Length: 337
Ligand SMILES: NC(=O)c1ccc[n+]([C@@H]2O[C@H](COP(=O)([O-])OP(=O)(O)OC[C@H]3O[C@@H](n4cnc5c(N)ncnc54)[C@H](O)[C@@H]3O)[C@@H](O)[C@H]2O)c1
Ligand SMILES: O[C@H]1[C@H](O)[C@@H](O)[C@H](O)[C@@H](O)[C@H]1O
Image 1 (cartoon, protein in one colour):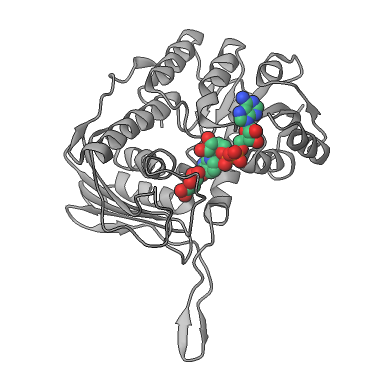
Image 2: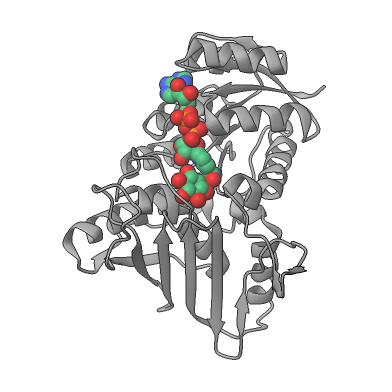
């Protein structure tokens, strides 16, 4: 029998994940949806054949629902994830796991008390083939001990609801997670530099920003976040080690020669750049949830990203180097990738 999934929040990405679960990955069906917007919930229900519920709590409590996807706004994630754990149901939560580090700790405590992993956090880059190749190279020692990582995260534009803090909390959070995973070290401090801002932005927004992170082993990571770069969605990552350097490949695109020039297309947005990664991420989630558990990025990874985010937001305010305030990794989460 397919895994019966309930989706809480069917806005932009919730709709996509509902479609992905209904039509792309195998072994699952969306049977329940809810959203603060009843019209949005009805539209997704009509498309997927799901039933509309009045609240996230009712989706979680339903005897028909085996597992839960949380794609509502960030501040509501903790309540739904804690509800799913209390009901003993596997839960996929889009980033962030919670907007508050204390809530992340509550989630870890509840999951550990349950005794088995139930939570997967939506850090889809770990399922991107390019990043996976980088990880294999680093783990095999092909570039020696990593010393530095140079990253860029460029979006063509953002809506005016996007704030300077979101450069870390919404955007660089992906680099924080994927670099922790690639280097297998925690991030211990953050600093944010603010170059001359682009004129192509809203007045309230500091864009671009350069974030500097240090890992527990002394490696240095720089991340350029530029969310009004205008030309496309561009994700870069180079890891420099003692004996070599490895660079994230762009997705394969044909090289077109015309008018005396050669060029390849730049992806337009995160959907196009990471579409295959999202599909792989959800297949892995469905496979694990069907066994009553979870895989991939854990609640600990969600907590670590939130703790680093808090330090970087503070660093943006002060301009100084801010240590990351992070508890030790609970035994329940050791040895997982
Ligand atoms: N992994 C990625 O690359 C990626 C990309 C986009 C968004 N996200 C994350 O996904 C989440 C959703 O983002 P989005 O862009 O789809 O936002 P959105 O605003 O388009 O959609 C969120 C939806 O949740 C609904 N909602 C909010 N609170 C609710 C509640 N308590 N119960 C039921 N419904 C509720 C809203 O009405 C809205 O329809 C965010 O946490 C965001 O950071 C991740
Ligand atoms: O929520 C989105 C999403 O996480 C994208 O992957 C990222 O590139 C954007 O900057 C962010 O706003």
